[in-house]
Image (cartoon, rainbow, N blue to C red):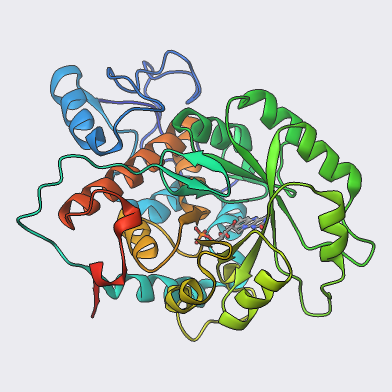
Length: 375
Ligand SMILES: Cc1cc2nc3c(=O)[nH]c(=O)nc-3n(C[C@H](O)[C@H](O)[C@H](O)COP(=O)(O)O)c2cc1C
């Protein structure tokens, strides 16, 4: 069987490293090649997510087409490490020494176990949802990640196109390696939000926010203030942005309540890539209490360490309306450009749908913490 798309690319500038399996002569020129025979079956908004496994099986059986890379998302980071340069690995795999926080997140998530149900007839499953007025085919958002051309030459354009193709929302980072306008043109039909760093005293750059607006970003996702930065900038952000505003980095019930009082429309429960020092507990530990305290008053999203469909299920059961993923789609990008991001997303969504089926749940809005037990 030949691979669907050749592995992303060689690892430039790293002596002694070579891509895992070199591109064969009959492989397409680039992962973005329109001819790349990704699957004989239809893909796109409306394709049932849970059928991806049987699609992969059929494509292999009937056409000799194998998936672009592993469907075991827990192995994705290691696979991406194989094709990335040393510099890219440092930037994309362990962010600013946050490895301890990453491990704590993974440990805390995996401690929650799924409770399988029997005697529940659930033929119909629906992953669709609406978050802050945006209709989504699944509760999964691609979070802001800057500098994505380091993972793959097609960078943010590939990620935004893969998201748009599946109808998922993509958050464009203000530190992206590709401009807002280029991404808008490349992924015109996609839902796009804008990820902004907390501004300095001078307030947000009005030109940047206007460009985000004009290029089609509807919502703002802001990183939390750093030590020494006050809340004053929030009023200026409000004045400069008339759409919904989501604040990231929330880990504490009191901060979540403060976000409600300050009129924010949503929060992301996340640990800021561990930049605030190693977390004592994984971020998921804080989610149930925060969701209890402020759920219904603003949108509660979860965005730290989600790697699989099972992790997504865990976060939804513990009170998140949707999850925000970062590194996993960048690993998919490194391994196969746009097709790699699409494969990663479809694998995660298939897994989520199958996990819901195992748990006997038709829609994730019916999930509650009782759908999990703790080790
Ligand atoms: C290489 C890299 C760059 C990132 N750049 C940004 C950024 O520009 N703005 C932002 O708000 N978050 C940024 N993030 C944070 C992600 O959006 C996400 O919150 C974080 O990676 C945690 O999610 P994950 O565990 O799924 O990766 C970045 C993360 C990584 C790994």
